[in-house]
Length: 189
Image (tube, rainbow, N blue to C red):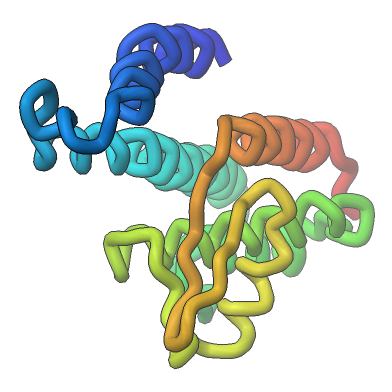
């Protein structure tokens, strides 16, 4: 959270100040004082920053779950590589449920939020932008549209996703923290 606070302060002090000055400048004189490409990059910089944090948070979650599973594997014959499934967190969940016998009913709310994080992360990594095409799977579209802290603007063939602030990042940090805490403190059968 400290990193987020420091970076937000830099963004507020530099980036938002620059864009505010640009927006206050009379249209006819903008070309004299500002470089259009520079303004465009600065406008996209905040979205790139937040999307990169989503990717990093997801990576942290994957590594945390993988570490827990690897520790648990030492005393068991079944390994995570023996579990079918796509993606580390889904295989880890299945391993924790089936082998370690952790009851995911108690952490269902957090798990549902993590599946939203998964869909958002996959969009950023595999589409490398903040555009959700209407040709994507209905499941992905509905899951991402269900993320309350994300502004979604509908266009003819796609949706534009936009972070208006760091609320979504803070939400996912809180969810990951709660999720991992509940897994580490749960009692297996």
